[in-house]
Image (cartoon, rainbow, N blue to C red; front, top):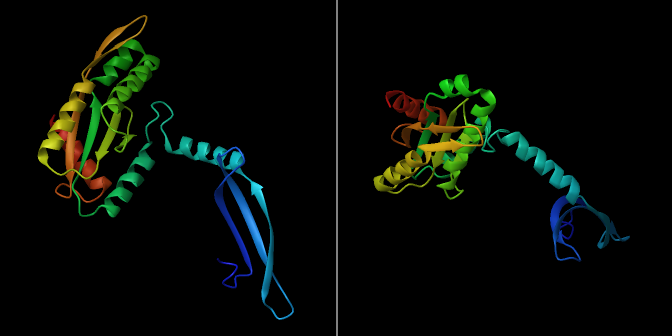
Amino acid sequence: RALRSGKEMIECELRICNIKNKYVWCHIRGKTIYDDNKAPVRVIGKMVNIDLHKKELETLELKAKRDPLTGVYNKITTKDMIDHFIVKHIDSQHIFMIIDIDDFKKINDKYGHLQGDRILSFVISQVKLIFTGEEIIGRIGGDEFAVFVGDIHNIDTIIMKAKLLQHALRTVYCDDDYEISVSGSIGISMFPKDGINYNQLLNCADKALYDV
């Protein structure tokens, strides 16, 4: 369509179904050939399979956005995603929950940092089990995590989500050598009542967490 409209050259990346019925990323470049009357008569160009390169880039991008220990989003990505979601859903109500592992320093001191890392990964795996995957879950500090739930319609939903999260945080980590009881505290803030962006919601939830 672009070439027919008179554009001399096009260049784009898109996915095309190959002979094995699988979609692969391709890079396409095309140039219009004109006749003596300057009317377009044909297009020449080339198509290159860039699927492997594209997947490598996607893998690198995913790693850049994730916390390497727990697999949830890192702090910068969490902030950007929450702020972006709020801008797109400015007329809805959302909740922001900050989670802190209780006495995590004592766990590290008693069992070592390696064991502490395993406990963090275990706790966040429990947290992820109770959500649908549409929520934004991120690690925003050493033992602090944020959970952002968009488009909440009533207070009962907030209470239900908080109770589920509280239950998931009351757990026991077991391996061949240890059986360690773990618990966590939660601070909650709401958009737009308590803040209109990530920083404001975090600050309000952090104060609630401190009170808890």
